[in-house]
Image 1: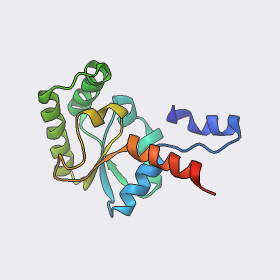
Image 2: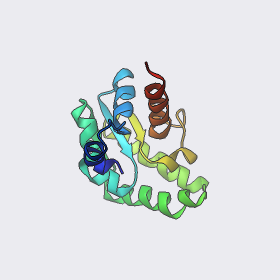
Image 3: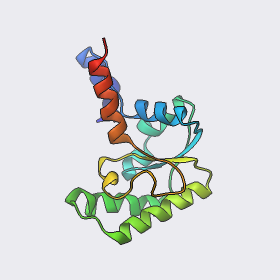
Amino acid sequence: MHQAAGAVEEAAGVPLLHIADPTADAMVAGGHTRVGLLATRFTMEQDFYVGRLRERGLDVVVPDATDREVVHRVIYDELVHDVVRPESREAYLGVVDRLVAAGAEAVVLGCTEIGLLLRDGDAAVPLYDTTALHVAAGVDWLCAD
């Protein structure tokens, strides 16, 4: 949906709260400049999310092709079916470790379901759940004067 954010916003004539914006705000507020991204393969490989983070001054690191496939497969074959496996959690933590080795200071959990598998505090770096950040920003936006 967020790939078409500009077109939706233009057609509707109202602002759209893009999920990457509160994520970027939180990461910048946390003092991070180089961040990893875990999400569907599409989100990790296309520019609609990564580009938006980069526009906010963040250097984004995505997993290599093998790790992107693991992350994507676990989302679609397990997490969307409410299947949470310890071995998948360990695989994700390995991907996070490799992102950290590539210089990531924090990692974006860029898919709703990843929060079923990982939470902030599970890794050596902060993990930012975009779902929670997006919801909080939406509530703030709706409650603003």
